[in-house]
Figure 1 (cartoon, rainbow, N blue to C red):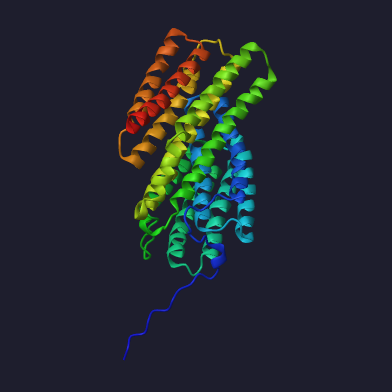
Figure 2: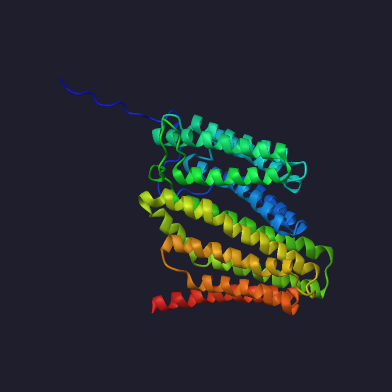
Length: 397
C-alpha cells in the first residue's frame, strides 16, 4: 500500500501575487501612493518648527515612527502583491486617502486631533492586513505571516487609540509603548501563543524592490525639504534670501549625493542577493534605519527654514541643532545602513557625525551666524562624498 502524496496547495488568487521574475519594478500605483507622504513630511517639518524644544522633537519622532509603519508595511505588502491589479490598486487608493487624513491631523495630534489620527491609523494598519489575508489565501507562508502579524497590529493600534483618548503625557507614553511593542513584535517574528512565530527566513522578500521603494521615500523627503525652502523664499525674495536658498539647496544636494551616488545601487544589489538573509536584512535596513535618515532630512528641512528666515542671526541652540544636527542624524543613519550591509565601519560618516555634533556648542557659544552653521554642514557632508570618491578610485587602482 503506497503512501498518498500530500495535496498541492495553490493560491486562491494567483493573479494578485507577484511572479518573482528578478527585481520587481516599482509601479505607478506605488509611486502615486507615495505622493501623500510629501505632504506628511512637510507637516512633520512644520510641527517641529512650531515646537522647537525637546518635547516637540519627541512628539515629532513619535508621529514619524507611526507614519513610517504605515508606509513601510504597505511597501512590504506590495512586495508580495501586484499593484497593477484592480483590487490591490483600490487598496492603495484607500490607503492613500487614509494617509492623507492622518497627515492632516498631525498639527493637532497632541492637541485635540489625536483621536482622528489614531482611528485612521487603526483602520489603515488593520484593514491593509485583513485585505492581504484575503488576497494571499492559499499561499501558506504568506498566510502564516499575515495571520501572526494581525494580532500585533490590532494591539498596537488600540494602544494608539487609547493614548489619543487619554491625552496629555499619557498619550505620549502609550504611543511610545505602541512603537516599542511594534518593534519587538517585528524583531521576534510576531509570535502568537499556539501559533508560534514567523521567522524572517520564510518571508521570501524581493530585496531589490524594497530597496527601490525606500530610495523613493528618501527622494520624497529631500523633495519636501526643497519645497519648504522654496515656499519660504517665495514669500520674500531678495539677494540675501536667494543666497540662503542656494545654501539650503546645496545641503539637500549633498545629502542626496551621499545616499544615491554609489551606496543606493550597491545596497540594492547586496540586499537582492542576500538569499535567506533578505528578510532579516530588509527588516533592519528598511524598517529600522531608513526612518533615522528621514528624520535627519526633516530636521535639516526645519533648519533650512530657520536659515531663510534669518540667515545672519546668531545661531541659537535650536538653530545649531537643526542646521548641524540634522545632517549629523542623516549621516548616522546612513553609517549604520552601510555597516549593516557591508559589515565594515563607515569611517568618514562616523567622523562627520562627531565633527557636526561637536560644532553645535561651539557655534552657539561664539554666536556664529545661522548661515555659517549651514555652510559648515554642507562642507562636512561634501567631504563625506569626496572621501567615498577617493576610496572608490583607490579600489580601481
